Length: 269
Picture 1 (cartoon, rainbow, N blue to C red):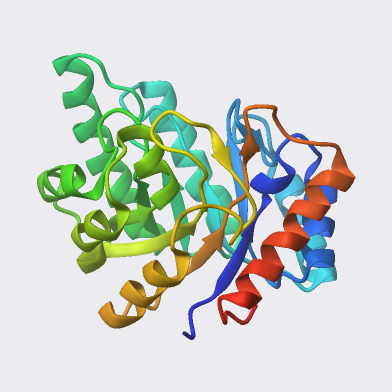
Picture 2 (cartoon, rainbow, N blue to C red):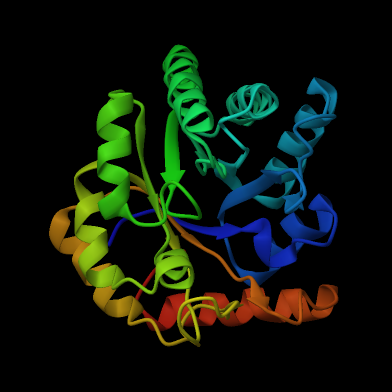
């Protein structure tokens, strides 16, 4: 496979961005996905980061020989605050030279919130088109836990040149217990980003170990991607387990073990 293989800064979620980027570089990554998710992993805080700080991050990436490919900019897209936050996330991605911004639907609970989601995302897609960006809508909680459910959502938004799936097999199992090998087929025709996230346990079990140390048949998933001609980024995520993230040394160990797992799958970083 000739896909760009990314390391996500989520493996260093509690630690500062400089430590996260340095750790990914030390582990052997050359392409990265950076987190700008409020309250989850704020390696970039979309509410407060200045343009000058974005330039500093860009220089840090260049100094480490890291290529920024995607931004995790997940927000509650049914709210005005979430819409504004994701707009800023897209500006950040553009400033760093990233072509893809990932998000999720947000947890819309009423018909009014769902309708607000659709209106907001259509506007956000139009702005992404102006910036030359693609949006990856992740298989995650609430409105879009599986690609099978998500097809109707993407159809209604109707921005195929901008909006596609960011498929996460670990999330699909965690939130629904669905079969990712079958479900991914619904995402493939319009997939723009893939989270290679391993998992231990079934629905509701929070355990996402380093690549290759879980129960998902990652080689099978990669074969499905290859057979379908998927050429987009593949981003390795490690989120540890219900005990939370370890210290910086433990996070670095997780990143290095993930790289070993990627090599074992025949992937070149």
